[in-house]
Image (cartoon, rainbow over all chains, first blue to last red; front, side, top):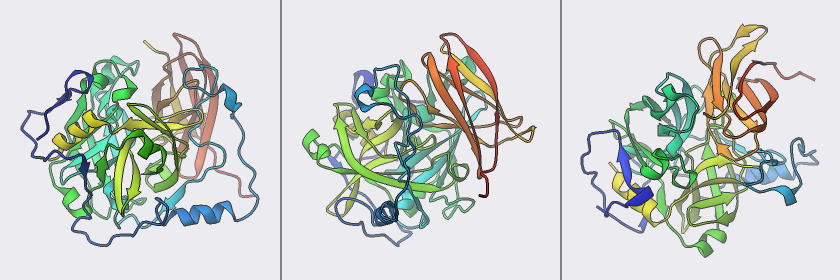
Amino acid sequence: MSAAPQGPHAPISNLVQTAAEAAGEEVSPPEIGSAGHSLAPGEDGVEALAQQRVALESAGPQAPDVAGLVDIGRASFADRDVVLETVHGSDQRVRVTDTASYPYRVNASLLITARDGSQWIGTGWFISGRTLITAGHCVYIKNSGLAAREGWVRSIQVMPGRDGDKLPFGSATSTQFWTVRGWADTGDENYDYAAIVLPTPLGDTVGTLGFASPVDATLLASVANVTGYPGDKAHGSELWYDTKQIAAVSPTKVHYDIDTAGGQSGAAVYIIRDGQRLAVAVHAYGGPTTNSGTRISAPVFANLTNWKA
Amino acid sequence: MPPLVSGRVTAAGAPVAGARVMFVRAPVALPDVAQVSGPTGQFALNAPTPGRYAVAAYAGRAAGELQVDVGATDVIELVLSLREPSSD
């Protein structure tokens, strides 16, 4: 086990703590899982599914949806006048229909029940038999404006490989979560990541994504892939994919112009290297011109490694 | 307390449970989650800063969207009416 990070990355949990067995590594490799069938990635760091996206783009003229767009010169996360628009210009997401194949089946649709009984949707992804990674705000609600809603959520139903009403691997419900002080104490988006621990090892069947903490130059030269369950599509029950070059990085965040929508919080932002899918960030925020996720930096990597169960 | 945008999702005047409700435009970057409307169609989303927001609801092929201007301490109540896309 790696030494647990301190300060804002200090891990906290609502469960009675038992040591998670995990080996510390700089790159945690993926596992295909016992369910078998695996889809080979496409070329240039994207999934083969991206070909459909290219085909759509070249199918003919398509008027872009410019409603709500602002001049790019005004676009800044600190500018209160700019607008959030998590689908930027024309929507380039592609629906994943082969959700029972690797790597898509490692993604799970989340139905989250908060303390006040309100329900929410999000996305998670397996890193081990019983552990999924997601956004901090999917397991611990902060700054909601409603006191009864704040804190650890009651439960999360996890549905890997969901496609509409079809649950090819069933579902499991968790009440055991991890996040870090930096998120739970102040709701700082730089520490917005978490883990869901399941009672059953569904991840052994569906497989896992790897994860890694590459340096800035590697990230900036990489194409990112995001697959999740957006709420603006079919009740948030369908898996959708998009890909684009990483736009910017900071020590704690990765920014990209990949189209997303509410419900995709927690999705893996992954690169494909030597045939391996490696998560490099946890998608969490929609912004005016780019969307962003919590970067898998060294302390995040250490926590993810320690949270494997 | 940050301002709240709350209300009910309806279709043809009847409450809609299970709709996905989310901000689609806002003054700042926001968590990419969606609320599931409750048994009476109710929802409540926090708006972390004053400004102009657009809140949308989706249920199957039906959708509805409203734009609201939110003040520093406002609790906005609204009705989001869902409509099926036209078949044209």
